[in-house]
Structure formats: C-alpha cells, structure tokens
Image 1 (cartoon, one colour):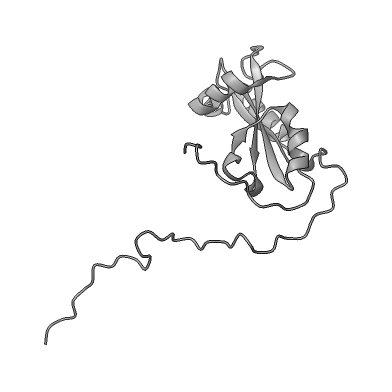
Image 2 (cartoon, rainbow, N blue to C red):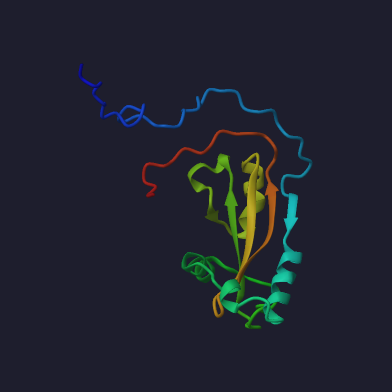
Length: 171
C-alpha cells in the first residue's frame, strides 16, 4: 500500500483573498463618548520624568551619547521640513535648533494616520474626527537627540467611519 501523498497546499487562504477578515462598512458604530471640549487634550501622558532620568544618565556617564542621540533619518528629515521651534535649547548639546514634530494616529484618519500635522491644524481636526491620538516628539538636528515628550487624545467623541483611500495616494 502506498503512503498518502502530501499536497502542496501551504495555507487555507485562496489566491487573491485576504487573510484578515473584512469588516463590514455597514456595521454599527460604537456609542458616542461625552466630550465637553473637543480641542482640550484628554488622556495626557507626559514623559518629562523619563526625559529627565535619561538626561541625568547621559550627563553622569551612565549612558552613551549614541544611545540617546540616535534619531532615525526619516525623523530628522521630518524635523527639518515640518518641525516647529521648541521653547528652549537642545538638552543634550545646548543648540538652539531644537524642534518638535507632531504625529497623529487613529482609525478614523484612514490613510492619513501616522502623518505629521502642524499644531495649528489640531483644533480643526478635533472637530472633524471622533478620536485620534497625538504624539509630540522633540528632535535636535545637530546632535540627533530625540525624545517623545507627550501623548494625548483629541476629538469630539462621535465615532465615524475611516476616510477612504484616494486613488492618487501612493503607498
């Protein structure tokens, strides 16, 4: 009797189908969250104590400069073109070129999630979207210092469907 022949099937997903289940766009949205002022940050997480501890380790010799001053090239490019001047000098090298870069993330933003936004754009976005997260990063282009300063949530609390992907948007 011959041994059973092994098949060449490696998975159960047919060619052309997605492995993740598709969510129905007609499904009900979650209930609205009561928000008094959409422009007022909520769920604020301030990383100033971690920043202070990192600077103490840097200046007392407990950590190498290369460990803390290792900004990604994309972050440096974003800081160069989209950065907003910070309130003070760089904490690592004392250069006055310290800038902040603001990123927004959220399901409702659709293909625009993870993009850089100007701080002046956030109040208008807070009225257009139900909920999205904001991440503020400080970056020094001279010594490549970078640190996440704060994260918070903005929005009016009314859930919305994700924005559609425009046809001309490149991946």
